Image (cartoon, rainbow, N blue to C red):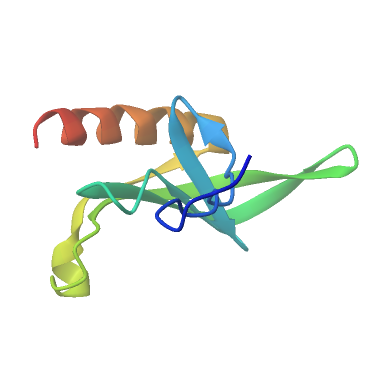
Length: 103
């Protein structure tokens, strides 16, 4: 199959959670697409050792605008801190779904 010039190569596939991409850079995870109006930033503040694994203990969650023309302090819509990555992702998904539904 030959590709025409108009077709872009397939973008890198990110891990997905409930139909939204997860992008990680160190202890920061972005949940959602930068093409949308909102994205959620999860930042791992502390970790604990469980057997041989390091597990996220305290995680901050921030619902943010993706518009870069807005000042960084004004980009944050909601913020919270939760214990554990699973609970933080659960809250992040609820916030993101509500925010995108209200666009």
